[in-house]
Amino acid sequence: MSRWVRNLGLFMAALIIGLGLGMGATFLTQGESQIMASPVEQLNDQITKNRPALLDRPILTVSAPNTEDGRLSMARPTTDIRANPRIVIIIDDLGHSAHQSAKIAALPGPLTLSFLPYPVGVKEQALQAQKEGHSIFLHLPMEPGTGRADEHKMVQSPGPNALMSGMEREEINRLLALNLSKLPQIDGVNNHMGSKFTRDRASLNVLMKGLSRRGLYFVDSLTDGRSAAAKIAAQAGMPALTRDIFLDADHGAGGVASVQAQLRLLEEIAREHGQAIAIAHPYDSTIEALGPWLVTAPARGFEIVTVPELVRGNEAMMAEARHHQ
Image (tube, rainbow, N blue to C red; front, top):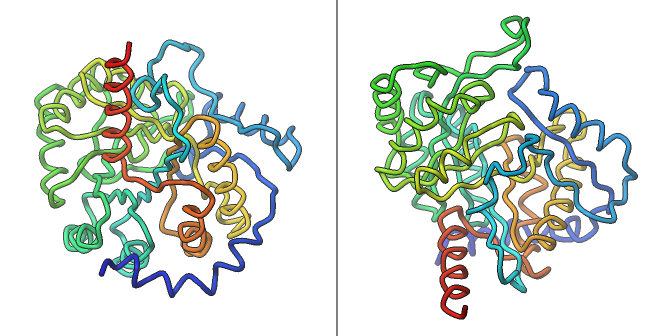
C-alpha cells in the first residue's frame, strides 16, 4: 500500500478546514529571497494590489514583452483541453532540513520535489522521497541579479558551485556534472535564483544542451520575467515548462491563509488552461495548507501529476491531434 494512501487518514481531520477555504485570492510573485523585484515582478504586484479580492478570472504571470518567447509552447498543448485539469506542484529549496524534507515527502502526491545539491545529507533525503513515489529534481543554483546598478548591495549568494553568466562552456559543463552528482537519479532541473543567468542566452544554450543530452526536463522558476530559459530549452529540443504561480511568496505575512488563496487561484488557472504549474517551499504554513488541498483536489476534478507525467500527457495529446488532422 502506498505511503499516500496510508497518509490519507492524517489529513482527514484537516479536510473539513480544506473544504471551508475562503474565496479570497491574491496573486503574489516572487524573485530571489531578499532581492529587489524586477520591473516585471513589480508590475505583477501592482496588478495584485489594484484587483478585488474575488477574482472573475485568473491572473497569469506577466512575462517579458516579447510574446514570441515560446515559454508555453511545450508546457501547454494548443489542442484538446482535458475535462480533468492537471496540476503540478513543485516543492523546491529542499535539503537544508531532513525533518522538513520528510514532512514534504509524506504528503499525498505525486509531487515534484527539487533538492539543492550542497546541503549535507541531501542525497539520502532525495532517495527517501523517491521511495515515496515523488519525482526528484535538482534545484540548480544560478547567478541572481536585479539588473540594477546597485544590485551588489541586495543580492544573496546562490550557494556553492552556482552557474554564473559569462562562464566558459567547459566550466558550465563541469559544474552541471558536479551538481548532478550530488543527487540520485533525477527527472529534471529547475533554477535556484538565477535572474541574471537565465537572461544569458549563450550560457543557457550550453546548459540546455547538457540537460538534453542527459534526457532531463527543465522548468523555469521564472524568478525574472525577462528569462530566456524556456525558449533556449525549446530550441535545444527539450520540453520547456514555466511555473505559473508561487504558492507561498507571502508566507511570512499571510501564513496559511495566503497559501490557501494561492491554491484557489491555481485551480482557476488550471481550469482555464487545462493545466498549471505551481512552485512552493518547505514552510510549515505551506505544508499545513497543502496537505488538505491535496486530499480534496481530486474530488473537485483535478489530477495531480509530476512534471514527467505532464510532459508525457501533453506529447500524447499532441500526437493524437496530429493523427486526426
